[in-house]
Image (tube, rainbow, N blue to C red; front, side, top):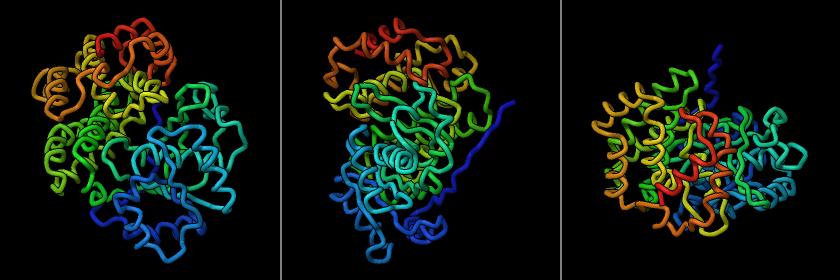
Length: 372
């Protein structure tokens, strides 16, 4: 039996952030903490949220979200959450802020240690409905974390590990395409390729979930059709709407699992140097992984070819080039000396289990070399 759940409430429209205060009231959040990053302040998005709230509504603001959430940032955020006796979180930003908010909501209501709740330590069953409520407000169109049940954290010991539970899904998502209007072209492209990768990998996942497949394909059509328009003209409202919807659909679809692209991106994203953007890594890995999986999902590849109007591998290669994204890991200054370590980590990543073709550490080593 396949049990399918889509549990979030989503407000999706231009100007949706105007409903933020009523959402706090509906969820019974009286002392919210905002989790965000300094770039949100620089872009003026923090002020836009504050304009929609009564004065002094926020009990605390954590604005130190790193580009890839870390165990240290969780510790700091939880300390602030408890210091101000907060009872809920508003996550404002990209996937990093939303993932960090989920884990602060977890550790603000559950005893430690953090790692005991992770997938590698079989901790998902230990995550309960006591997780603090999260309102997720994405400011990029890529991760789909606003409706996702997972969060990735770079641990002090060097691992980047996953935390997965339906209790981590934000209680409410406010998807306002207006918040992405000022996103720079490169970030628009990189985050957009993240959404596209989610749709492709979720569709190719062998898990049985036809509704998720349909959502993934609809998201793929939107991403392929509008990513270049949104990148070239950031003020194109239709393109921004379509890319935010593609991102949302990618997040809904990957409830059925992802694959080797993400298994490789996760450990690389955990590096302290160089700091690597998740969506850019996905874009670089997609061609090699698509080649690797092609014979193991031939019927689905025919569907991708029809939707993308050509060979998916070549389509992605050419799209990355037109978007101005790196062509290889070498272009991103990733040292090949770490490939054995990354390959081993990828083989143990939770996304490996739902890749359409079984992948070993040796396979991942070859995919890294092919992408270098």
